[in-house]
Amino acid sequence: MANISTKYLGLDLKSPIIVGSSPLTDSVEKVKKLAEAGAGAVVLKSLFEEQILMDVDAQRVNNMYNSFGDAENYLTYYTKQKSIGDYLELIKDCKRETSIPIIASINCMSHGEWVEFALKMQNAGADALELNVFVLPADAEYTGFDYEKSYFDIISQINDIISIPVAVKMSHYFSGMANFFTRLSQTDIKGLVLFNRFYSPDVDIEKEKVINLSFNSLAVDNSMVLRWVGILAPKVACDLVSSTGIVDGNSVIKNMLVGAKAVQVVSSIIKNGPNVIAEMNQSLETWMDSKNYKTTKEFIGKLSQKNIRKPILFERTQFMKYFSDADFVNL
Ligand SMILES: Cc1cc2nc3c(=O)[nH]c(=O)nc-3n(C[C@H](O)[C@H](O)[C@H](O)COP(=O)(O)O)c2cc1C
Image (cartoon, rainbow, N blue to C red; front, side, top):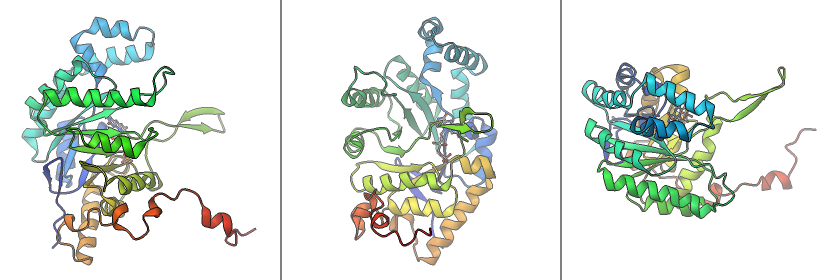
């Protein structure tokens, strides 16, 4: 029978399904249910850099956010409801009540004194840390190089402080993406999570209002992840994990075939409940048996860009065939 276990960030995962950072992972009760359903690991709901700073120096952060009423209110509210000490308790409880790896998570955009808190996460028992770094490139004075530097600064400071493995969850808003991600992978980080998903705008044509697109992703949202995992897997010096649009067992298999060591799932579990994890594990096992794979190592990366006969398939972006031959258009 196929063994669906995998290794990610040096951690042994009994399944490649990692529950991504979200409200699904904000309590020990939920994490226990996810572990029972067969999750290989969980990434806890993120703490924000500002929350940590707020705890360190509430007055200063209030001053920082004075001109952003919403952010200030949110932070003041959130910090009153949940202290960062609760986060450390969550890590300890999850470690005590489950046997799967527990990955802590911080949303951040700069290096600074908040980084010290990572050590407390490590001491509370976190098996790894995922940094959800996003710096909006909105300052006209900053070049792409300046923005990239802020990622290196954060990683360097974090790695000076903690010894547990660090993964960085990335967006796809970079110009020289293959070059930048490859250089990031050559630092002390152990994994890259491709990609984060952001709130995106939609339009309600009845109310004639701009609204938020549903946060649930669809299978089609995974195609960009497949492309970049396939392109980067042969190039990077760390693990890759796919995130966004992994909705069923087939998408788990596809992402591993192009090079992902594991996958992260959120929307599908929110929509279908934790049982979808068991279904994904079952589909993977059945597929591996049908292909005679005994271990995941035998097929991870089998279809990465370097291993296929037509590597251009990962890079082709224009509908060349369809531009030249329009017979399929039924008009
Ligand atoms: C309601 C909700 C809350 C989320 N909160 C976080 C968060 O705190 N930190 C984080 O890194 N990602 C967060 N995410 C992003 C998810 O971890 C994940 O990257 C994204 O939803 C794409 O995966 P999916 O297609 O399986 O949903 C959140 C997603 C959702 C839907």
